[in-house]
Image (cartoon, rainbow, N blue to C red; front, side):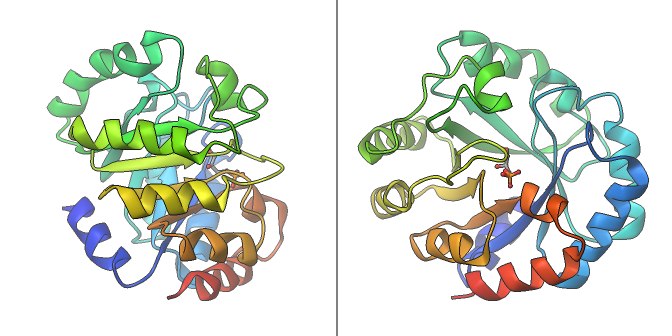
Length: 245
Ligand code: 1GP
């Protein structure tokens, strides 16, 4: 199982997941990014996005699969983010949404498909931090964002997720965020729950990644920082080196 493998490997040091958005990345480019990510030492390819990810999803995953052997995990933005070509799915509930669609209805609409396609589901709480509505995920998801200076609110949601049986939490600042999720929030969730912790959004330097890995993140997600640079392999290597324990 992908989840068991990730758990085991992340106990030796944080893993690096490279995010590919099928809306903004054409299939050829996606294959190239995955290949370079793998050569640089990345551990996971995450595929998904908030808007329009469904149209090219299968084609993008096929291209990634033919260019790398990394596990492909879906990071769905809605019910159109499901594909039988992926190895697993972050089966997420956006717990700090104020619209029940994003907490449980989208999941209900997608669940039968996920089971029929036998995609490994990784139950994950999804939490979006301030400024929230300025990111696509926050705007789409009717988010009541977690205040940056109130890590205890992130812990409260994470503890609830743990008691509800979820095994992972994704602490999200939003793609391209000016500042990543606060280190204090990562630390507080890590010290007070048994959840695996995924951190993403606005991680655009090895230092920012290292701080969050040190605070207890099990998986660091990077998208924009790699999209912006020419040398994807080089940037992946730098982040991998920085998050090693
Ligand atoms: C977005 O957490 C991911 O959902 C990645 O964000 O594009 O800012 O790396 P970036």
